[in-house]
Image (tube, rainbow, N blue to C red):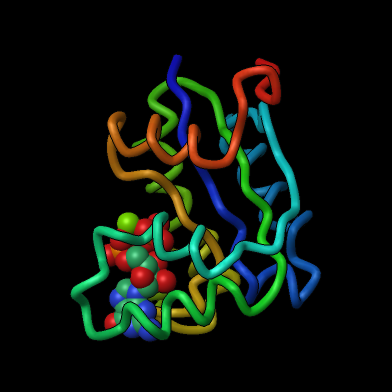
Amino acid sequence: TERTFSIIKPDATKRNLTGAVNAVIEEAGLRIVAQKRIQMTRAQAETFYAVHSERPFFGELVEFMTSGPVVVQVLEGENAIAKYREVMGATNPANAAEGTIRKKFALSVGENTVHGSDAPETAAVEIAQFFAGNEIVG
Ligand code: GTP
Ligand code: MG
């Protein structure tokens, strides 16, 4: 079993879609073993997306991620990282497969409803940025 880090982004919390997104997550067989609603600071968003700091959309990305509440989560399951990437769908909702979270709910490549870790190393770093060990209950 494996853990991945998820964010329900501001476009979704603004539209009251937290529960709808969680329903897709749980129907996919992923267990939500930690979850909290937070307002990300600029510093937290810049640290979280540091890998994208040279990209032209970085400023827009940080603005968006701090534009409203987000729900940070730890998801657990068999092959959780790859499974959640599949459930999320492509980054650009125009390319996302039917039934995926981004196909159902995302507004654009920027306002794309969810984040999910892309590898075990990034999952560990991302989980540790937002959760203490005793906040994760498997
Ligand atoms: P995450 O799970 O959020 O990391 O998405 P991803 O892994 O599918 O995409 P990637 O890591 O390449 O990009 C991170 C995030 O940056 C995306 O989810 C988008 O929110 C945002 N992003 C990527 N490309 C663009 C773009 O061209 N314009 C804007 N505004 N945002 C972008
Ligand atoms: Mg990514």
